[in-house]
Length: 189
Image 1 (cartoon, rainbow, N blue to C red):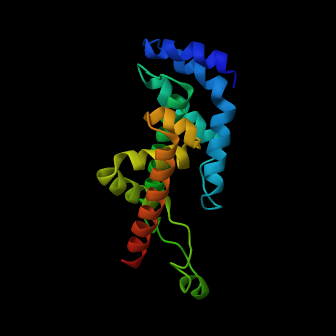
Image 2 (image 1 turned 135 degrees about the vertical axis):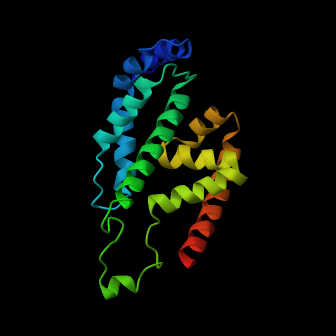
């Protein structure tokens, strides 16, 4: 991404220029697609949503927004990260809501015996845990969202949230422990 181009477009988005998102997406497209692919690589292997489709859906939602109101490249990345999370959660909820056993998975007896033994949490369980975290610790929840879904660095997150990089690192460590405990408790239930 050419920072000069993005820096020139961002104030226009803040001033309500309707086509600012349309101008900004091509500049950051490769970066958004890489972040989407990185996230989807951590998902289940049979995921039906592709990185390109995810980025295009982010573009559609950003374009539909009457006023983008971004102050920096990192702030734009934060908005895109939040949209990616929302899209992925909606996709997962829709998949699990299918009639006639859409949420059921066939497991062998060997697989059933390993449930809860290090299986990655589902996106829906993670989203529920993040909502609980946000209710008690909103800033820490934002740090997780920006790092996990947005792929932002601690420095970028600090700029978006207006805190120090050390605070971001402390929040990240706290949130990881809190979420691990929450997801473990959900598995035990």
